[in-house]
Image (cartoon, rainbow, N blue to C red; front, top):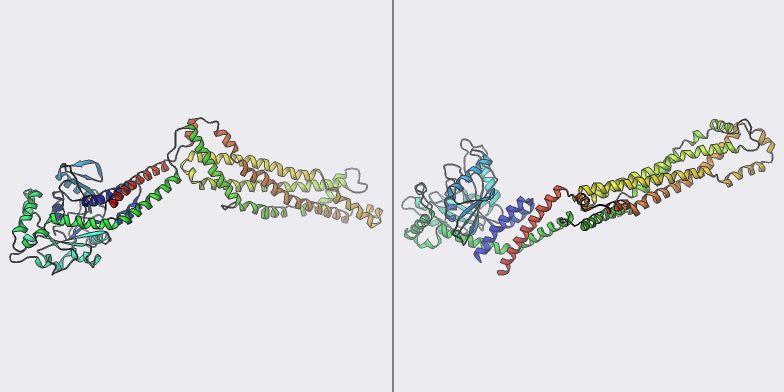
Length: 610
């Protein structure tokens, strides 16, 4: 159970790292925050790297004077049943390291790739996994050593930079702090304890580790610290004895070093009564047990978070669509479904469920009346123009009773002005319908994955609208021509009756060619044109709706359906040529979904096993 739970963290953390490779940085951050980790904190030369190596049981970290750890090292320990030991770097996933010297060199080389061969630091972590039967399942983070001054080759801000980097890791509530302090220094001056107390004032997340017990002055000991009298923590202090520099130079292996450490605590009169709770092996077991308790408490929230992420990914996958079948019939069905999805959105714009269709009404209610008011009837029916047209209509023979040909010519020439607004209504409606097609294509989420089909469908819809526009123009102009083809008789029958009511036809005939006569003709024609204008103002919108709007709702893609029904499998496949960006997105999402589900299954299995 213990190994299962602790190993679970390692697997989830590896999954988090893999998720980052598949575009899940935000999700990784959330999941990572919910997982416990152990960060090793200490001043430079406090022995924290040696503590790490003691827990691992292998000599793999770079050595040297000054600041050696210049990037965070995320170290994942995996206990295996196989006697074969090896290490893997995340940035070199296909290479297994069995030579510890090569691991040490790669850590240095990878550090230099980011920081250069300088003494500067970087917050970009190095991820290293160690697989061995001789380790406990733990995830440890080695951080650059805290320092008080900048040395040559370092920026003046490095003291604050290191402290801020360390704090960014250990201030997280899920972080277990391994505060390493040398026993041969006053605990009151410990950099590790100082920063740990700032982020964990109650000491609930802090484990104190005393190094260099064997280097203390003779006659002194660290019992006040180890027994919690100098500085009390919630968790007991643990003392360790690391290899000396001479041991390192002589390549004393970790097995021998651990044996000598056990002998030290067994034989030292100051610490023999604490021997069962001292040493790097005990420290590893304590951390493992604490990590297990933390994981148990976090399992429900981790499961809830993973399930939420799975739902979000599946929702997005459904939106961008699953992989397509190679069957021609299935492809044709997919194309028709996509067309219907677009057509549904287009109709929603026209019917008011989505915005845009209301602009067509504005054409009828505002633009058409305004265009008719601007027609130059005042100029066309001026007395001078009326006189000219009436006179031309009579030719050599003056009219006898009423200038009927003059009336007809005036009316017919006036009605031609309505052709402009009639065409404008159709063109304006066409422009809005085109815009609604463009918007509907953009709003159809399912179409976004197929740019070729998207372009073809849009072009087909535009071509259909153009055919409807042509039909609408013919009908609108035919309405205007119909008004000119047959004049309303009842309107003009009133005119001679008015003369008869006046009682003196001979007087009327005598002054037919004076200004008043032409003025009356112009007024009569203006009234008739106004009556026709009212009729067209009501009928032209009906033309636009009947020939364009309703027809677009009814049969916008009918011609397109006929064309794709004749296409062969290769042509259909070409239409369903996906956007490479979406294809890559689907691969990323599918991989992330697989990783999340695997993590959920493993966590669920552990939860049930409890």
